[in-house]
Length: 462
Image (cartoon, rainbow, N blue to C red; front, side, top):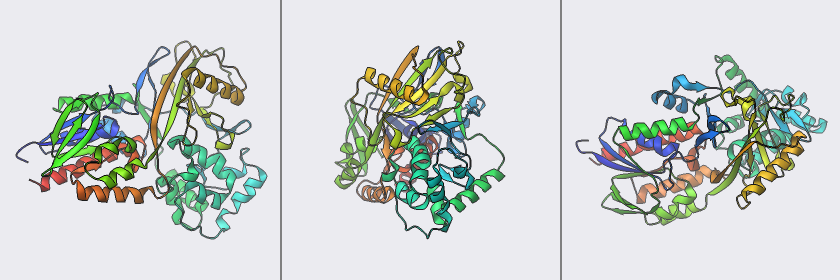
């Protein structure tokens, strides 16, 4: 391109920042402006000091290493040498007591009979029901994780293994969550038996050289978004916080993004903001797309970080934390024993850093006052651990509408949305957790894909 083209990216989370970075490091001449409605960059990634430690994440605390996109970006940002992985501490499920999560699982789906046969988490009746899975007729396609897994393995495997593991990642009710949106499980449905398919998948993983499952910079996930922002500005990009988009106008294949603090003309737009909040400002471009976006559901989560003194923390609790199945939940859905999970989260005084999650799809806690949320968490922790905790430090992070819910047939609705918008507003594309995956690697991949799509569009209009 002989003349620099202009692109506006809406949203300064990991998806939007990756989009901007990819545009600016391409071989094309592109001017990039990133607009963020809040006062800070990072979106659902936030790392701050806590209890004497310089960096403790308030949101996502790691990325999946085996999906390469986050690890590749970390290397590009010069963070490769700082990446650390969790300790070997083991996680549990709380069901009338602690039960170690069995081995030989694929995101909760058993890969071998022994995964449930030897587990104290599953009742004798539940074990017998699960053992029938290889002998059942093929289950007809249904895009609900809960429906499919219950049909194959029975209620207990779903409620005590699959739903807690998947639900903790997506803050989801998996009975109302798209099977196709969780590739690790969806890939097992192409075979007659999920158990046999999971066994083959686990065997293939076992043949690969051993490698960490998760990684994070020593300075926390915020090091990645901060690194992206620094590179964007050094490459000539412009990041503007406190700019809430009100509408996008179009004329002659050009766009004007109107915000609370000014307007920005451009040749293309990448929308990397949550679906629910993006619906209003694309209405002038495409009313059908706006309606579809407005139908997206988002779950909210409160994450409470606590520091518990060393003399209060029982020596018996050496695991990385636990999950709570939905039938057993009151308020706490999961608890991470952060100082057991991460070696760099160990304060000098030996205290324990806990991260406690409350809220999910169908269990909204955002209307509760801070003190009430902390008290609910402490009451549940006493029930689960049998001890009264008196935290030395407490930090409450509210993540409103932070987890988009991929309802059954999510991708069909997404295809309709993108088809409609591509006809009415070519050059406007989506990226981010609302669309094709909420994990850090998935968001990074979507950011790169969106930038490639925009560059292709701009090249065709030269």
